[in-house]
Image (cartoon, rainbow, N blue to C red; front, side, top):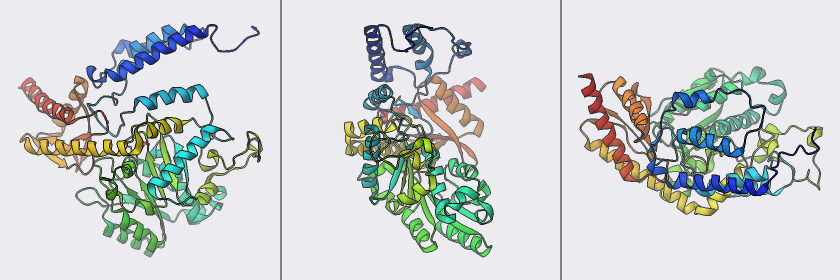
Length: 478
Ligand SMILES: Cc1ncc(COP(=O)(O)O)c(C=O)c1O
């Protein structure tokens, strides 16, 4: 055995030069994003290269990097491109990218202990509290994304309903009677959270929506009443601030009223919509969110922080702590030394080891400022309104959902198969990447404008391409 097993390089200058090349290339990659296709299918030989045997022996870093440039970078998701309009994907940003490198260099573990990265995460929590007008006792935590944030909020609501006993005993008899409520337009991760928490998805009532996908509050009241009459125990309402399909925002004030009257936990899934609090133009649409018991949202969506950076905010920090803290000898706390600073982030969620998501968020918020990020959000809504006008003006297109925020859903006048083919063909063309969904039982083209680089001309290019592609498909079939 060598007496030096360190993985550090023999020659730091070589590493420095290699690192500088990588950084330069990645900055070029961002600066030249418009010159590349939005997305391109992975060629078979590239995919095949990634069935290689386990690498027992070392390879030079520059060779591995060359493989990355050849095989990985060109075939990424494409969401840094302004023509990417599928699903709900943020565009990332250069300052956040650099911060990711710094985080990796520090290699900090934010599960706990007393070090500055945790202080940075707590700084973000303070900013989040301020943004949503939450009290000082509110707790919060970075997580992978809103799916996990919703799950954590649900477990906090479970503690409120059943007490901490549920942590030992499980749902037992009383837990089986609990019922939660959300709208049919809610994201599927809410049902998944019910499944993972052991309630089962049947314990989640999916309430009807109006024609803009907002929860029907009268139907909600009726469902709560019916469940109480049947001897069940309503315990939680999940409102949506920015629905995944069409950007609908529930009437959060009415939901807050219902929850207060009925003593229910009020959680808001604001995966992308919640951070519209940064925009004075959009914030009034979220009125009532400040009354929630908890909010789940992602910095990696509309706020453009690089993936991943989800967050859960809980009004009652003590309840949040009681839901997750799990003393262990090997995690002994102290009032001084590295083990000081309790409670630690691991006391507020399921993860013990945690990366430094807070740093890229801190860099992003400070580099651009929340006013500018809010203006980016408002601008994407203006682009979506432009798209809506464009769709309305095209006789071959049919508007399915208007621009409530930054999402527009429309169809080419034709059957489902044609609309699905249009979307896939458009994605493969590299010109634009909307996604396909199903609304009112019909395949629908969905354009969600999240990227700070997108401009009106990008949605025009997308609409032109939809019409042109439909013409090409029709000619081919003739
Ligand atoms: C409304 C809503 N909730 C939850 C999620 C899930 O968020 P994540 O992908 O960060 O887990 C999404 C994702 O798009 C969403 O739009």
